Image (tube, rainbow, N blue to C red; front, side, top):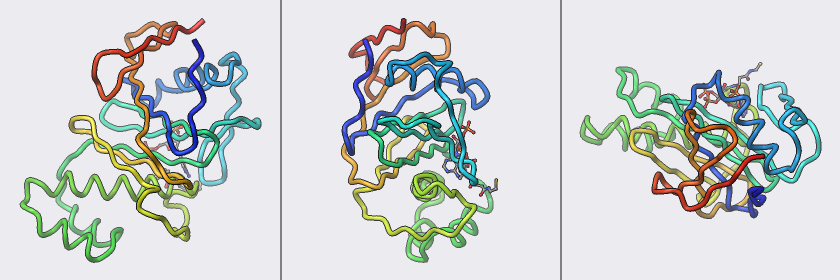
Length: 204
Ligand SMILES: CC(C)(COP(=O)(O)OP(=O)(O)OC[C@H]1O[C@@H](n2cnc3c(N)ncnc32)[C@H](O)[C@@H]1OP(=O)(O)O)[C@@H](O)C(=O)NCCC(=O)NCCS
């Protein structure tokens, strides 16, 4: 069965149990399934800031992020999308980085938290920032100029992984798919938020 294309504002988030360097065939395979073509026909190009996108006109857009042994592939119904995930971890310069990259009240809010809660709060803000920069397509290569509304950025988490998606259109709840590296590539299991499979999408 071919996955249905995402509706506007309801992106599909594919969680892939794989490191960055292992992801290209999975990504090509998943994109090919949506488009009804062979993985070998998926041509990916990058903009001057490194954002990968489909090289041929298509009714979907995607973005990828890697952290903590996971990769997330976000797929939209064509509108630009950005995704970022980070494994929550404390580090000594957390306060200084927050001060440089976040609005003053946000950085102060993180600083005011009990030490044990700062890393997760930082990761939440950081992923929201990176998802915006990745949606715009310039990452940290250029200063942010777009203005964002609250509903255009959605945060999520899976255990110790925190993430966010950003879109140019208002976002509703994303749909989750989870696949394991150990799974044969001929069978992609669909799971919602790590719950038991709700459907199996058979790959040809
Ligand atoms: C995009 C960026 C924020 C991601 O950083 P990160 O947190 O280390 O990495 P993540 O795991 O979250 O994301 C990596 C993925 O983001 C995607 N990506 C790369 N550059 C991107 C960009 N400019 N916009 C959106 N997505 C981008 C890619 O899919 C990449 O994975 P892949 O190479 O396996 O396909 C960072 O690389 C950046 O700022 N890049 C721009 C640098 C730049 O301006 N270079 C200019 C000269 S080349």
